[in-house]
Length: 305
Image (cartoon, rainbow, N blue to C red; front, side):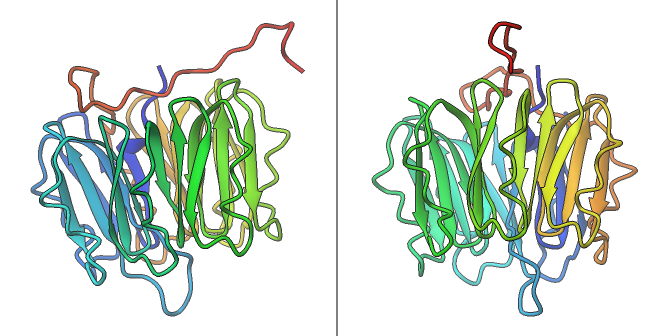
C-alpha cells in the first residue's frame, strides 16, 4: 500500500512529519511558532499552511488531526486559521495560506480563516472525500470522482467542473492538479511556469502542487516533477523507493518506504533539514478517523498506452 501523504507536509518555510507513534516532527522557520509540535501526541495526519514565496510572505501554521477526530493547531493565527479547537468528527485536513479546511465523516467540510476571495465558501459541498488548499483557492473531490473548487480563479485554477474519475486533488498558487483513478494526472490554471505540464504522466499514485511546480510519485517509487526549478525543487529524478511527496512553496519532500525523508529545493530556513528523520508513517487503519492509504493504480497491458 502507498503511504498516505498526510504523514508529510511542506509549507512556505517549514516541513512537518507524522511519526508512526503519533508524535510529530517539524523543521524550518519558527518565527510564528509553526514548528511547535513537540508535545503533540496521537496524531494521525498533518498539514502545513503554504503560500508562494515573496518578500511579504512567510508566516505559516501547522495543523494535526488526532485519532479521536479533534484537531490541533499552532503558528500564525492572524485570520483565525488556527481556531479549530471546537472541531469534532474530522477525518482529514488541509491547510493553505491563512486558512484550514476539515473534512467530516459525512462528507461535509469545515473552514476557518481568510475568505476574501471566497476560498472558504465550502459550506454547500457534499459527499467530499478529499480536500486541498492552495494560496487563494480550495479544491476537493466528491465520492463520485468529480471535483469542486472555490476562491480566486483569475488563472483558471478553479476550472475543474469537467474533471471525472478523480482519486485525489492538490491546489497550488495559481494551478490545480488532479489524479485520476487510472493513474493519470490532469491540471488547470497558470501554464507559464510549466507546472501544469502533466499530460504525459502515467502510473501516478500520489501528487502534490507547490507554488510553481508539481510533483508526482509513480507506482515504481520514482518521482516526477515539472515547473519552476529555480531552487532545485524539481531535482528529484534520482529519488527511489518513494511512497509519498509533499510540495512546499519552493521545496519538495519525499517519503521513502522505510520511513525516512528526502528533500530538495530552498533550504534558507532549514526546511530541508530532514536527513535525521525516521519512522515517518501513516497510522494503521484501525478506526473511523483513519485516512485510507492511497492505493496503487494498475492497468492491464491492453489498457496501457
